[in-house]
Image (cartoon, rainbow, N blue to C red; front, side):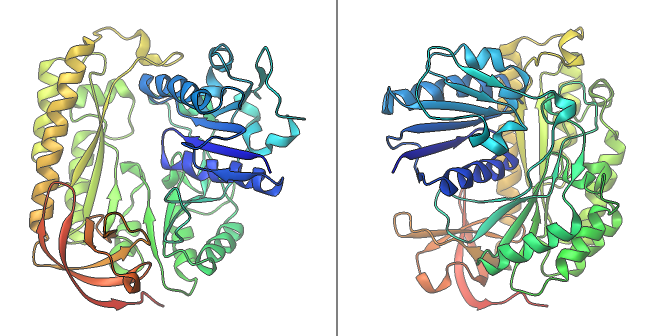
Length: 438
């Protein structure tokens, strides 16, 4: 039996899609092995959000060939969709498949014999379709958390972003099929379902149903589970979604809400669909409607035109915002974006310095949030893993919990009292297991 190993670069959506690719190989009689093991075929699902993601692709190809110099290497994903010729030029790559083609791998490959030149199959962006599905949250399928892709593509025109070029326009999974697949995940034993998409809050394009209404439909499915939204744009996080989250035990008390910049002028240059006043109002409203809410933030440093004044505006805006943590990205020039031709490019070393400043601030925010939950009781879902005698889990608020391993508490919702915290986890005592039911 031939062996295939898969590696994912980038977002949670990519993990879901890699799972779909893996299922194609399983159906065709292949054994899926860990990427660190020797395999006959290596599949790399790429990202193109940052320059580092593309460098990582080249490094991963080299790593695969060190494990097996004769292995067949297939590269797909957003980087493959946008610049297939660059990937085809990497030594050792045999096949490049675009965003559409990756969902039907065996239609393009007769055998997995290495070739002198890489083959490229990439459809135009306007011809893209979507494969909706799910992936387990870990390398091993521990049946605890699943990423469920319900939306793809994006109609926004942010000046720094290549995702609309790589994934096409916004489109959504049929709501009936979404409910059906959601129920199948629960039947398979998954307890937390993370709804993913390129712009998941934009769900509803081409299916005549809003994201809020889909959430209502999913919550009608009986069972013991929790729904978490992977990320949602601030202009799409409506009052109805906030109130639904506040009123349902099955909705995670956590949102990841991209900001990108706390400078009004930079937000305008980015062509974001809100301003800092809108964002500030939303964060305070969300905290008021859902007390104890965990909130993550995306932010970019070093965007063209970001001088010291604009960076200070971002720093101070985040400093005063009641949020839990940041994901900080260093701006990198992306071909075919408006931003690449904008004046006021920031020195790369200065971009990185600003990134480090905000990451330090994020650590302080996270420490403050963890301090705020000391003594509180939270609902934790422990995963079925045993790392050095510890089991890990997340609270509804996305607080990372660590506790001595106890088999009987894995893949169950447990009442947990938080007693202490460190830089990465909170610790405490399990009070009881419980079910989140209708």
